[in-house]
Amino acid sequence: MLRQRNLLTLTLGVALGATISLGGSALAEKEAGGDVNSIPFEGLKTFSEVYGRIRQDYVEPVTDDKLLEDAIRGMLTGLDPHSAYLDKEQYNELKVGTTGQFGGLGIEVGMENGFVKVISPIDDTPAQKAGVKAGDLIIRLDDKPVKGMSLNDAVKLMRGEPGSPIVLTIVREGVEQPIKIKLVRDIIKVKSVKSRLLEDGYGYVRITSFQSKTGDNVLEALGDLRKNGELKGLVLDLRNNPGGVLNAAVAVSDAFLDDGLIVYTDGRVEDSKMRFSATPSDVLNGAPIVVLINSGSASASEIVAGALQDHKRAIIMGEKTFGKGSVQTILPTSNGGAVKLTTARYYTPSGRSIQAEGIAPDVPISKVKLEAVAQSEFAPIKEADLVNHLDNKTKKEEPKKDDAKSAEDKEEALALQDYPLNEALNLLKGINIVRHRGGSTAVTKKN
Image (cartoon, rainbow, N blue to C red; front, side, top):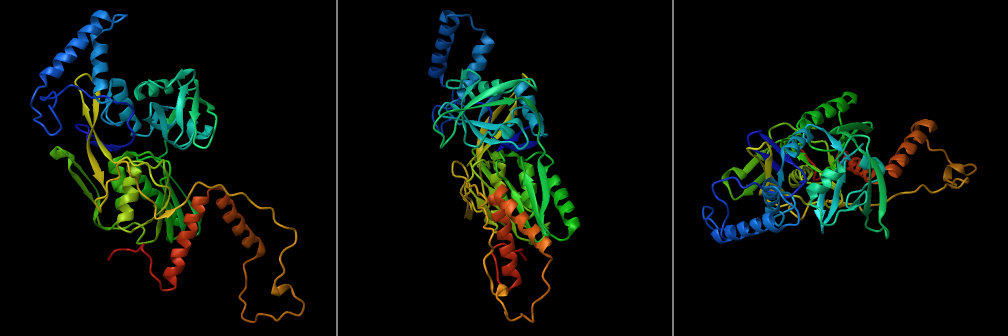
């Protein structure tokens, strides 16, 4: 999660580098929990010695600006993958990225064992269309090995002029040899919310990332779906959603909750302690919800899934999520850049920390792919096919065969195209069957 002071924008997502600025009254602590105002003279003396040796003895001249910026970047290398120093250009890209348009390949990335790890590809981008998958490890960018690069340097190489090509060499779990994928850079325009009706009364809303207007866009999408009649159930798809704006995650959760805590954060300083609660009004009036998640669901996605799970407002289905539960604060610097510093952890309403743990689904679904089985030309014999069979005098008029076949075809097509989504739809139907027969489910409207 990422907080931004001065700009009043709260975001969640995956960091793009590792660095911190030297600003502030305290330079360092002697030890964890020590006096923040103490100055580590011995450490600064060593730093000064190394700095001088580099300036004097390094094989090539190095400017003071480069040495100091590299020193700043290096300070956070050993802390966590999400703290970073952003120069002016990177800071501007971060601000633009939260509005839904930026340049690149369309992947959220982190670092793992010295390689770039794909957190998730973004829908309708070069990376997603080329088949890049969550969990892929990028080991080469064109002919340049990634090992030894900072994440920031790797990201710079992946970005470039729209229309320019790049070849990613990746290692994928379950595949013996590295895979080369050629992509063409493009302007990435992320449409945050997509929606459609799966069947009469059953809606589908996919959130690809959490942007500043995602909360409003979700409400608009639900309004459009309800023009066809009241919704009996909703599938909220957060798969491969890497995060985004915190306020949007809160707004999406609030849309389906009447009251109660949505998320809270806790850190060392007072302004890192925040609490966000729901306001009255559930836009679906208690209609059941299934939330789809996978290993590419991170940060803001985990906040929404965790809040709806803790309040028993939705059934969470799919794979365990990524597990990014830390808070980054954006601190603008005097040179036009910014420091992105991890300052807190966030927690679900029940007090669960998602950090390095993730959200476990209520209904696990492994990665599977269905294939259609060729049907025999001979249909099985039924009672109605037997000669002189007794008629059913209470039989109601059945739908036309063409209509029935069309419904079956649609169901089969959905199962083959997106098995978890098909299972989510079936679960919603099952919940409504139980409700209509007088049973109870865990997904109910609060009174």
